[in-house]
Every structure is written in C-alpha cells, then in structure tokens.
Image (cartoon, rainbow, N blue to C red; front, side, top):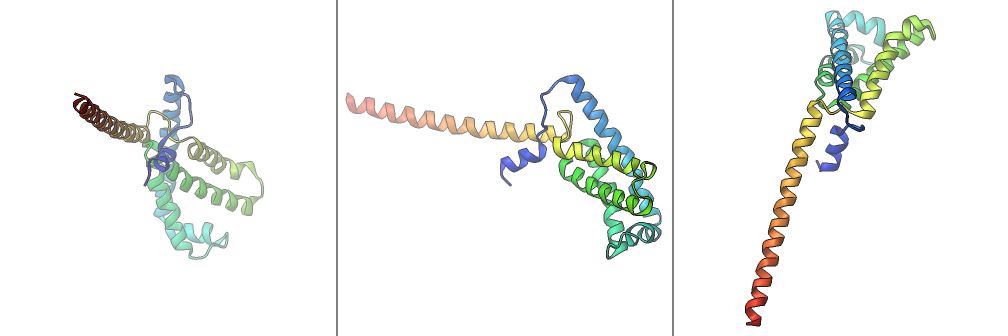
Length: 177
C-alpha cells in the first residue's frame, strides 16, 4: 500500500487545536462505546433479529447479514472508540445505520421516534468517515510513525546525494591538481 492511500485512511481533516481535538476524541469514544451494545443485542438472539429486521426488509441470507451487522458493530464500534482504522470502521457502521433507518421507514414511515437513534448514529459515523479520528487517536499515531519513517528515508537519500556530490567534487579537485 502506498503512502498516499494510508494518508487518506489515517489523516484527519482539521486544523489542530487542543480543545476541539479533545472534544473530538471524547465524541469518538462515547459514540463508539455506546454502539457496542447493539452488536451484543443482535448476537443475544440472532434468529429473532434476522426474522424481525433482515427478512422484513427483504435481504437474502438473513442469518448471514444479521451476523455481518452484529460483528460490524462489535468490531467497528471499538475501533472508532480508540480511533484505529476509523474511516473503514465508520463506513461499515454508517452502512449498518442506513439499513436500520430503511427498516424503520418501512415499519413506521418517517416517524422521528423510530428514526431518531439510527439517524443520530448514522450522522456521527458519517462525520468520522469524512473527517477521520482526529489528532488524539491511534490513526494519528500511526500516521506520525509513517511520516517519521518517510522523513528518515528522505534524510538518508539526501545524505547519499551529499556524499555522492562530495565524492565527485573531490574527484574533480584531484583531477585539476
């Protein structure tokens, strides 16, 4: 994987300042931790969830998709909370919430009472999908390590060029004498 792709995955879209980044980290942790129980609830009775939700909206393989939803929430939510692979995790969680919103619309129309929680979660995960985890995250630490490795590589290349230049200029001086 090249560095530009990794930068897209890990780099936040913000101008850094401590208060906003602290709030961002708290927001990420709260949303991620609150979402975990949804996956646990699904696994508690996967057949019932598959019948009531997945079969109802007409998806094939309801047990399979129920497990996909449960494990997306059980794996993706903690990843969002710690800020690791935040964008891919947020994409999975955002998708799960869109399906939940679709289910709620089928069941009750555009009723705020039914749509409220899944819509709020969807917007939160859309935020992290677009903006990343923020500067106080595991993603930011990884990006910092990758950037330091790239800087080290560039420094080595510059040193080699300097040595090469020095050697060629020493050689030219020796030929002039």
